[in-house]
Image 1: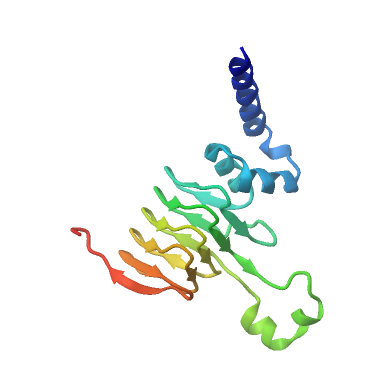
Image 2: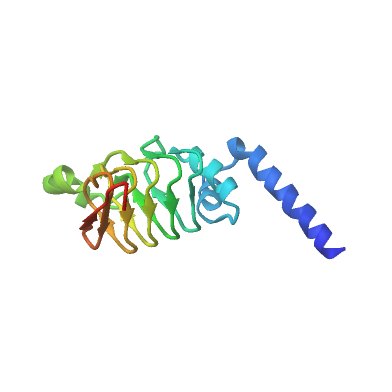
Length: 173
Protein backbone atom coordinates (compact mmCIF):
# COMPACT_ATOMS: atom_id res chain seq x y z
CA UNK A 1 0.00 0.00 0.00
CA UNK A 2 2.76 2.43 0.98
CA UNK A 3 4.80 1.62 -2.11
CA UNK A 4 1.79 2.22 -4.34
CA UNK A 5 1.15 5.60 -2.70
CA UNK A 6 4.80 6.65 -3.06
CA UNK A 7 4.76 5.61 -6.71
CA UNK A 8 1.70 7.83 -7.27
CA UNK A 9 3.39 10.76 -5.49
CA UNK A 10 6.53 10.27 -7.59
CA UNK A 11 4.48 10.16 -10.79
CA UNK A 12 2.54 13.30 -9.80
CA UNK A 13 5.77 15.17 -9.01
CA UNK A 14 7.28 14.10 -12.33
CA UNK A 15 4.28 15.45 -14.27
CA UNK A 16 4.09 18.61 -12.16
CA UNK A 17 7.72 19.43 -12.93
CA UNK A 18 7.47 18.66 -16.65
CA UNK A 19 4.25 20.63 -17.14
CA UNK A 20 5.32 23.76 -15.24
CA UNK A 21 8.88 24.43 -16.38
CA UNK A 22 7.91 27.74 -18.03
CA UNK A 23 6.41 29.25 -14.88
CA UNK A 24 9.09 28.15 -12.41
CA UNK A 25 11.23 30.87 -10.80
CA UNK A 26 14.85 30.75 -12.05
CA UNK A 27 16.19 29.61 -8.66
CA UNK A 28 13.95 26.54 -8.76
CA UNK A 29 14.85 25.92 -12.41
CA UNK A 30 18.54 25.81 -11.45
CA UNK A 31 17.90 23.55 -8.45
CA UNK A 32 15.89 21.08 -10.52
CA UNK A 33 18.26 21.24 -13.53
CA UNK A 34 21.33 20.45 -11.45
CA UNK A 35 20.08 18.21 -8.64
CA UNK A 36 16.74 16.52 -9.38
CA UNK A 37 17.15 12.75 -9.50
CA UNK A 38 15.37 12.07 -12.82
CA UNK A 39 17.67 12.82 -15.77
CA UNK A 40 14.71 13.32 -18.13
CA UNK A 41 13.42 16.17 -15.96
CA UNK A 42 16.91 17.67 -15.55
CA UNK A 43 17.31 17.76 -19.35
CA UNK A 44 14.09 19.78 -19.77
CA UNK A 45 15.21 22.26 -17.11
CA UNK A 46 18.72 22.53 -18.58
CA UNK A 47 17.08 23.62 -21.85
CA UNK A 48 15.39 26.41 -19.89
CA UNK A 49 18.89 27.50 -18.80
CA UNK A 50 20.02 27.76 -22.43
CA UNK A 51 21.57 24.33 -22.99
CA UNK A 52 20.93 22.44 -26.23
CA UNK A 53 21.29 18.67 -25.80
CA UNK A 54 20.97 16.01 -28.48
CA UNK A 55 19.09 12.74 -28.40
CA UNK A 56 20.42 10.17 -25.96
CA UNK A 57 22.41 12.75 -23.97
CA UNK A 58 21.84 13.22 -20.26
CA UNK A 59 23.99 14.78 -17.58
CA UNK A 60 24.53 12.92 -14.32
CA UNK A 61 23.78 14.50 -10.95
CA UNK A 62 25.83 17.60 -10.28
CA UNK A 63 26.23 18.50 -13.97
CA UNK A 64 26.22 22.29 -13.96
CA UNK A 65 26.35 25.14 -16.44
CA UNK A 66 27.80 28.48 -15.34
CA UNK A 67 26.41 31.41 -17.33
CA UNK A 68 25.37 34.87 -16.22
CA UNK A 69 22.43 35.42 -18.55
CA UNK A 70 21.19 32.00 -19.76
CA UNK A 71 21.60 32.80 -23.44
CA UNK A 72 22.16 29.59 -25.37
CA UNK A 73 25.91 29.07 -25.28
CA UNK A 74 26.23 25.34 -24.58
CA UNK A 75 25.58 22.88 -27.41
CA UNK A 76 25.89 19.17 -26.66
CA UNK A 77 25.52 16.55 -29.39
CA UNK A 78 23.87 13.14 -29.45
CA UNK A 79 24.80 10.24 -27.18
CA UNK A 80 27.19 12.22 -25.00
CA UNK A 81 28.01 10.62 -21.65
CA UNK A 82 28.37 13.25 -18.92
CA UNK A 83 29.59 11.87 -15.58
CA UNK A 84 28.75 13.41 -12.18
CA UNK A 85 29.93 16.89 -11.19
CA UNK A 86 30.90 18.14 -14.64
CA UNK A 87 30.96 21.95 -14.87
CA UNK A 88 30.76 23.84 -18.16
CA UNK A 89 31.62 27.51 -17.71
CA UNK A 90 30.14 29.49 -20.61
CA UNK A 91 30.70 32.83 -18.92
CA UNK A 92 33.60 33.48 -16.57
CA UNK A 93 33.75 36.77 -14.72
CA UNK A 94 34.17 38.17 -11.25
CA UNK A 95 30.48 39.00 -11.22
CA UNK A 96 30.48 39.96 -7.56
CA UNK A 97 33.57 42.16 -7.88
CA UNK A 98 33.43 45.76 -8.96
CA UNK A 99 37.00 47.04 -8.91
CA UNK A 100 38.54 43.89 -10.33
CA UNK A 101 36.29 44.11 -13.40
CA UNK A 102 37.62 47.63 -14.10
CA UNK A 103 41.24 46.49 -14.41
CA UNK A 104 42.09 46.48 -18.16
CA UNK A 105 44.03 43.19 -18.07
CA UNK A 106 41.13 41.43 -16.37
CA UNK A 107 38.65 42.85 -18.89
CA UNK A 108 40.76 41.88 -21.90
CA UNK A 109 42.26 38.53 -20.87
CA UNK A 110 40.44 36.94 -17.94
CA UNK A 111 36.80 37.92 -18.34
CA UNK A 112 35.42 35.58 -20.97
CA UNK A 113 32.11 34.44 -22.35
CA UNK A 114 31.85 32.11 -25.30
CA UNK A 115 30.12 29.03 -26.65
CA UNK A 116 30.93 25.50 -25.60
CA UNK A 117 30.32 22.87 -28.27
CA UNK A 118 30.45 19.14 -27.55
CA UNK A 119 30.11 16.89 -30.63
CA UNK A 120 28.34 13.51 -30.79
CA UNK A 121 29.51 10.41 -28.92
CA UNK A 122 31.81 12.13 -26.43
CA UNK A 123 32.57 10.67 -22.99
CA UNK A 124 33.17 13.27 -20.27
CA UNK A 125 34.57 11.89 -17.00
CA UNK A 126 33.60 12.93 -13.48
CA UNK A 127 34.64 16.31 -12.05
CA UNK A 128 35.65 17.76 -15.42
CA UNK A 129 35.64 21.53 -15.95
CA UNK A 130 35.20 22.90 -19.48
CA UNK A 131 36.01 26.58 -20.02
CA UNK A 132 34.44 29.13 -22.42
CA UNK A 133 35.26 28.79 -26.11
CA UNK A 134 36.06 25.07 -26.00
CA UNK A 135 34.86 22.64 -28.65
CA UNK A 136 35.22 18.89 -28.25
CA UNK A 137 35.31 16.72 -31.38
CA UNK A 138 33.27 13.58 -31.92
CA UNK A 139 34.23 10.30 -30.24
CA UNK A 140 36.61 12.01 -27.82
CA UNK A 141 37.20 11.13 -24.18
CA UNK A 142 37.91 13.64 -21.40
CA UNK A 143 39.52 12.02 -18.37
CA UNK A 144 38.10 12.52 -14.88
CA UNK A 145 39.22 15.66 -13.09
CA UNK A 146 40.43 17.39 -16.25
CA UNK A 147 40.26 21.12 -16.93
CA UNK A 148 39.66 21.64 -20.65
CA UNK A 149 40.96 25.03 -21.80
CA UNK A 150 41.19 24.58 -25.58
CA UNK A 151 39.81 22.65 -28.55
CA UNK A 152 39.85 18.85 -28.45
CA UNK A 153 40.13 17.22 -31.88
CA UNK A 154 37.86 14.30 -32.85
CA UNK A 155 38.93 10.81 -31.72
CA UNK A 156 41.23 12.11 -29.00
CA UNK A 157 41.71 11.21 -25.34
CA UNK A 158 42.67 14.17 -23.15
CA UNK A 159 43.29 14.39 -19.41
CA UNK A 160 44.92 16.60 -16.81
CA UNK A 161 44.98 20.20 -15.64
CA UNK A 162 45.18 21.71 -18.14
CA UNK A 163 43.93 18.86 -20.31
CA UNK A 164 46.51 17.57 -22.77
CA UNK A 165 46.43 14.87 -25.43
CA UNK A 166 47.01 11.40 -24.03
CA UNK A 167 46.29 9.47 -27.20
CA UNK A 168 44.64 9.73 -30.58
CA UNK A 169 42.07 7.09 -31.49
CA UNK A 170 40.98 5.65 -34.78
CA UNK A 171 37.63 4.11 -35.59
CA UNK A 172 39.04 0.57 -35.69
CA UNK A 173 40.56 0.55 -32.19
